[in-house]
Length: 241
Image (cartoon, rainbow, N blue to C red; front, side, top):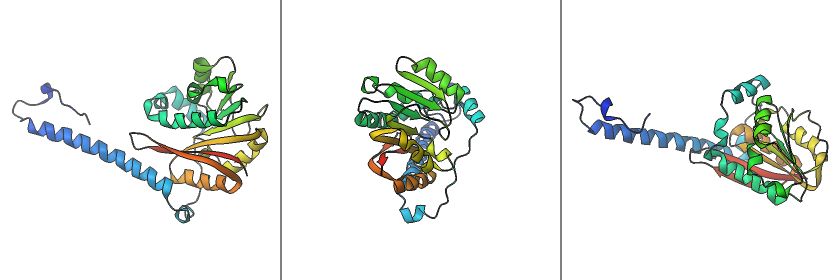
């Protein structure tokens, strides 16, 4: 609903008061939607474990063709906007903090937005992997260069060529049937004292994944990002237990 009405849109016989009511209603409706989203995220993030246990985990279902169509159609363009800066800022800060001059692997790299937030001087090089051919093509076009590689790959089958200081799983673990088995497979590809940095949108499905990860990994640090629209994310750092 628009926040203003042009004079030409107001019939000559209609007083100005309803315009103010319309503006007020629009602001109220927008505020209510924002707080409803915020409340939903808060409940998902802080619901007691005993309540989370009552839910059964089932992964998000999205085919590779859908990812390519969504990227090509501009569905994910908003990820470049200011509403995502806090989340990417926290992920990047954790990556910088736990780097010891080695390489970084970014699973779910999309079109390379995290790469844009990283100071590559801290890492030997960066490798981004994503399931979407369209996203990887954009990433390589916009952010490819020296010490940076973008590859099309499936996190469940991708075989790293080396070990990393930091391996990022960015908003993608809840698309997997068994997220914990994936992290377990990547432990052999961490350098000594290397870490996993995991980011997930706050929802019950993500809480189920956090439960899996907490059982077999050592939680090092955790933070949350909340934007003006009421959306929130939890970002955690794990090491081998």
